[in-house]
Image (tube, helix red, strand yellow):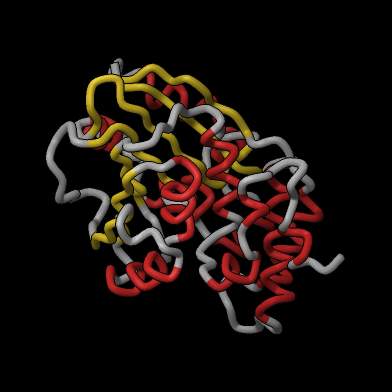
Length: 257
């Protein structure tokens, strides 16, 4: 089986496996977002008609998935991707009636307070959600009892505990891993506010393997990645050598009190 073909895994991700892996790779902005979202959704209660904010929606794959698989109404909010670019993805996927694309910076969201039944964020929360005040700000956009779920690169040990960013991670990612936290860090960070009840906080089972499969597929699909930061082959080598010792994917869900 080719690396691209390996992105279909109906045994573990039956919903995601119905999507064309080439379509998904063409929308790449991080390791297989549908796998992360499908797994995360197992810890949420998403129902048809809910109003859902997809925060850091990128080029739109996760918003398409939310609309199709769970029948929710989605606001796809991203700072880097123009709304008209995302809207074309939604139109091609036949979900324009369910998904609205919005350009929004995560610290200055242009939405009414208490308007969403759920907020999800896939492979984006590490860029804006680690400050002490961010969760209290974000929870304000949820209805009482609303749900919050995020998936992000994670660590099995805190960088602080390690005494710094390990050299092999720093070489590829610079200081970025200081924002990749353990599930336990996220649980405390959210629950200490007393604004939410954390319903799950876990490292995705074999998440590092999913990350590796995705990077291999991306390298096969896109060809030579020389000059990209970080280089795909270097990421493949790092994940292979680390084998889940430090790196993984963290999934966290909570309900607003």
